[in-house]
Image (tube, helix red, strand yellow):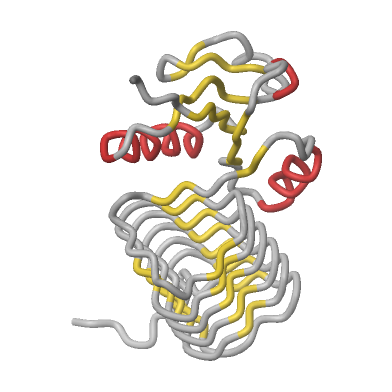
Length: 215
């Protein structure tokens, strides 16, 4: 008997949406689970077209009388929140984890999260809902990642860290142990955070100050 696939739509038909499509392909290679039936995007230039063989729709409501699962690919937390809170609860937000991710037994996780390949999740991690953790990140033990966060590739979040809601952690950032990142903050790419960050604060360590020229 042929396995019935679960129907999935992806909010956002941009680059992150395409990455999620590849993630789903890799999940299906291991265990055929998902059928992507559409992208959802407000961009009039994309609606009706096909991206990676998948049609772009304007609204999720176009899929009538179907059991639909969804994830949001939008990296900007403010836009992500607006989208996620507008979706009818009859549609189910699901977690997508790459098959390479070792999931600790004590992981506490919400819904609607997307976790790409080569991610290390240590013990005691708590992950909220609608977060995206990009390629090659390390999440240290007992860390708390709140809702609607976007963690960019290669970031290192050390143990006992708390990241508030709706933050962006730029690629290659390092957050030291026992740091609190306030909600709606932005950590610039390549930054090293060694002290707490207040709410709605942008922190950028680059370009770095030149202390001494090398002859």
